[in-house]
Amino acid sequence: MNVNKLLSLKGKVILITGGSGLYGRPMFEALAEAGGTVITASRSIDAAREVVEELRPLGFDVHARIVDQADHTSVLKLKSDILKEFGRLDVFVNNAVARPMRKYTDPLEAFAESMRINATGMFNITREMADLIAVSGGGTIVNIASMQGMFGADFALYERTEMDSPPDYHFHKGGMITLTKYLARKLAPQKIRVNCISPGGLYSGQPDAFVEKYTKKVPVGRMAGTDDIKGVVVFLASDASAYINGQNILMDGGLHA
Ligand SMILES: NC(=O)c1ccc[n+]([C@@H]2O[C@H](COP(=O)([O-])OP(=O)(O)OC[C@H]3O[C@@H](n4cnc5c(N)ncnc54)[C@H](O)[C@@H]3O)[C@@H](O)[C@H]2O)c1
Image (tube, rainbow, N blue to C red; front, side, top):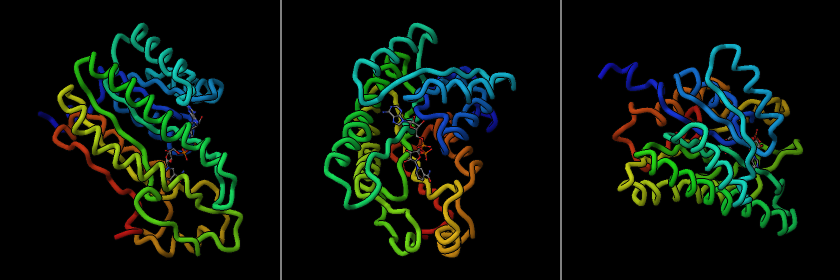
């Protein structure tokens, strides 16, 4: 088959959570540019609508919905709305994240809140959307983890800044990478492939002290930009990756090479 056809998402109904966020926005855009019917769902309907209103005039088939992935009723409502309105789901990009814990010394309640959303909630929405993909005849799930789920933090990078790398984040992102492998096997009989992307830091106006130290360590000499994740997510969502299942792609500019 022609490679452009393999990479095309035409005819596919795609859900991405958090499609108005830093990495979410370029992925949302890329999935629509590749021809998909793309729904973004997040806690803030206003933020989701804003990005949809920017993309619709460009001719893209994009939609905004609200969901709290930590709330089972809200997830079930999103699931039944997608089925009613679009008739199917082919691709789920599991991107949303909440950051209730900011540093190592934060109270345990912040860790527990993170697990409620980023572990239990993340699993809940994944299982429900996998069920929807299964009744649609199969498809793909792309989990968005992080290099922080694969490696310990380089704390020297945060010196002389207010930044930190909180422990809950490493814990649930590491869990997501392992869950990818579990689900790749578990959901294969329902013709669902499950893969993961582990991005490095996206430049979003971090303090100069951090950016300088970080970029010196990255072989490609810069932090990630918004275009860097577009091709990877389209590839994993599309039939071009039909024989890739249970993998985690580290997208860190060679930081851990
Ligand atoms: N920004 C980075 O440098 C970076 C680096 C590596 C990996 N990542 C990963 O990329 C993904 C996106 O990160 P980002 O930086 O764009 O995040 P962001 O904070 O900009 O956006 C997060 C999105 O998740 C949504 N969200 C939060 N809680 C939710 C809930 N309970 N239910 C539904 N939606 C909810 C928010 O509404 C928001 O749209 C995350 O999985 C993150 O771990 C980001």
